[in-house]
Length: 439
Image (tube, rainbow, N blue to C red; front, top):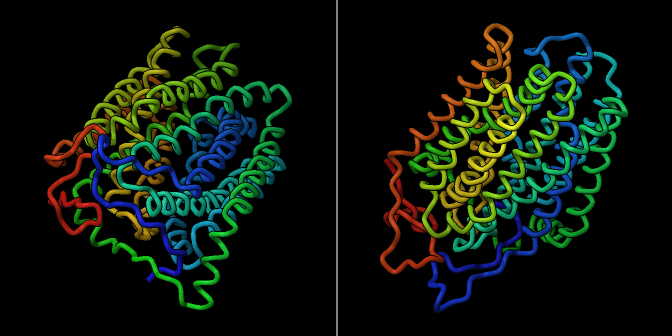
């Protein structure tokens, strides 16, 4: 059994919006939403600069892409440990420790004197990153009322995207001061984020420590990974998470800045940051409705539509030669990713169930996403070096459609009494929220 603090009880079944008021967003989740904005602002700050900083050490596109991949690789190998740490120490402690590790790593990147040093320092940051990502996802899944999971996923994703809108623009402007300054700014932003969580969730941390010491407080069930593997939605989410990690977190972060510089010459540096910010604007626009659509119509439809749109936009963007079309495809890609994001997070939370600790389940999903983030930039970078950026993006978009195919056989069925506030569910089964889409 988990040693985490007990979780407030929320009704497990969908409610009728006309007869019962929907629950509010828990305080702990609001804190994580605020901290996510600070983290994303700093990450967006260095995103357009990182590949260019790597090439300043006289390496090619593929080697520059490895800088993005090493971060995800470290997250991948450390994800199982992060899940166990979340079970043992509680979400707040693991979150704060992870953010501080990334802060230290980021500041060291600013002092890097060679490509090898930059690679090592960036990789160390991945260890801390998976700690705060898995712990945040576990806390959100455990405390999210089932009726508003889509809304909460949208809020959390939206906070990241707000930071990603401002971050890349600031990063492109900060590039004029040199490649190193943004890393110091990002490191400071992470310290701020860790402080927000530390002081705001101190009561949750003390409750966790008291439970561990006295072994007297109510415990929280852990969901076995074998149970999650029985859900078709979980297996489909692993595939779509992999393809989304390849496109959105890997190729977009590593190749879009390099493609912009190569395709648009003198305007490329500014356009690199602008493209990432515009992508985030598209995400934000989709998130205004994605959460409600997810709670109303289920997880499958937003994922199918969103991932299809994102894949097609990715496949086409490497062939454009005009700035307006480049910007338009960036917006469209952002819309697709924003539409599918909350639905995919809510699908994983459905499998975990209200009130249960899902550290291992969240770590497994994170590993699938990180695996795509690792090999995506490397393979796409090799394709770009040998066949050009166009084919690199086309192959990535085609791979994204594999995630669409994985979700096609997943079946969802809304209960007869459901209204527009109810989420779609499958036939009742062993999962906590009535989910049983085993195949």
